Image (cartoon, rainbow, N blue to C red; front, side, top):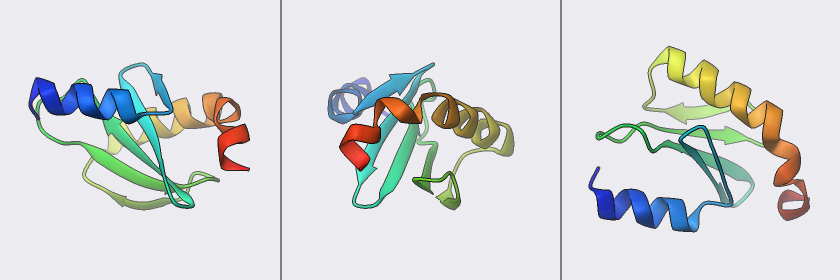
Length: 79
């Protein structure tokens, strides 16, 4: 992923935690690992169910943990 694309994703994100950008896409949340040069993306429901992912399993665990710890900061936007 190019630096320009990372910047565009970061600008569009509603929340960034630990290098993971969280973007709302309809009723779902797209999580992008900004620390990787290749695209590591996961789409989850608001309650943390994985719908699709190109992340490695350990990344999924980390991203979901960050989501669960910080989801309240996007609740106003999601509700």
